[in-house]
Image (tube, rainbow, N blue to C red; front, top):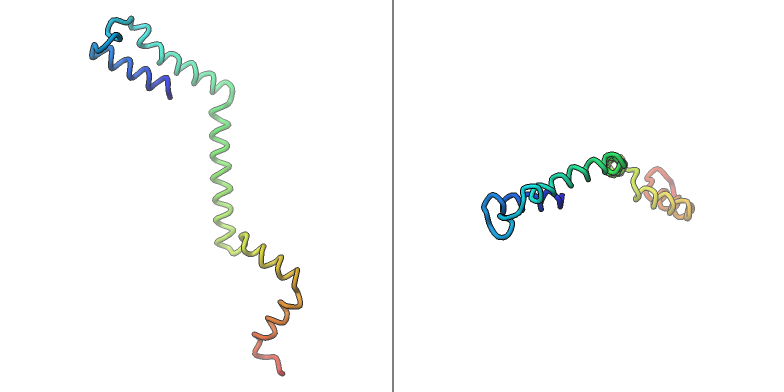
Length: 105
C-alpha cells in the first residue's frame, strides 16, 4: 500500500511539474508501481495473502459461534451457573424446593 501511495504522489508531482520531481526520469517516478506489483507477487507466492484471509475467516467464524451459543443460552454464563450448581448442590436443591409450590411443609 505504501508503494502505491508514494507512486501516486510522485506521479501527481511529475504531471503537475512541481518541485524536483518534474526533472526526474519517468522510470524513477513509475518505479514504486513496479515495486508494489513485485511485493504483491511475493506475498501471494509466500502465502501471506491467503493466510490473512483464513485468519479473518476463522475470527468471524469464532465470533458467529459465540454469538449463536449465547443466543441459545449456552454461553459462558451457563458454564458459570453449572459450575456453581456442581459446587453447591445442596444449596441449589434447597433453592428449588423453596420455589416449588407443590411441596408440603
